[in-house]
Length: 185
Image (cartoon, rainbow, N blue to C red):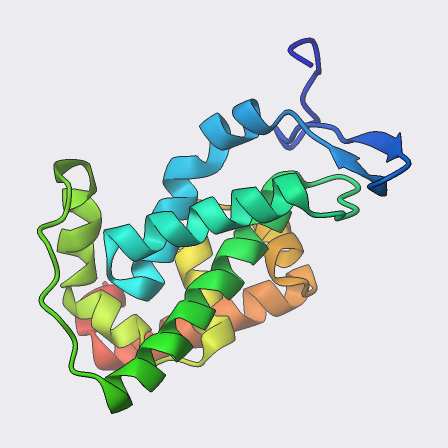
C-alpha cells in the first residue's frame, strides 16, 4: 500500500476489505498511520492521564482495536484514532478514580526523556486550569493548541459541528483567561 496518495487533509484513503470471517471493513496502511499519528496521540493521551506509560498503553490499545476490529472508517482514520484515544484516556481516568477510592496509588517511575516537554507542560498552571473546564471545552482546546489540529479535524474527532468547535474554543479561552491572566495576553 506504499503507493497510496494522501487526501487534501493529509489522511490516508481507505480501501474496503471483504473476507468471509471479518465481513467488510477498512484496510488502512497501519505502519504509515502509526508513523504519522503515534507521537501526537501519545501527547493527547498524556495530557489526560498525566502518565506516559498509561498514555502509550491507551494509544497502543487504539491501534490494536483498529487492527483487529471491524470498523468502517470512510475517510479519516487519523480522526477516528484521535477519538479512540480520547475515549480511552477518559476511561483510564475513570478507572484511576475508582482505584484511588479503594487502593493507594504507588509512586510513578520517572518519565522518558522524550516526553519531558509533555511532563513540563502537564505541571503548568495553564494545564491545571484546562482540567477545570467542561470536557468538550478541554478537548477542543487541547486538540487545537496542543496538537495544532484544524477546526475541521477537531469537529471530525469529536463528532461535532465546526461552529460548535468555535463556540467551545471561545468559551474555554474566556474561562482560561479568567483563571490564568497570561492566557489573555
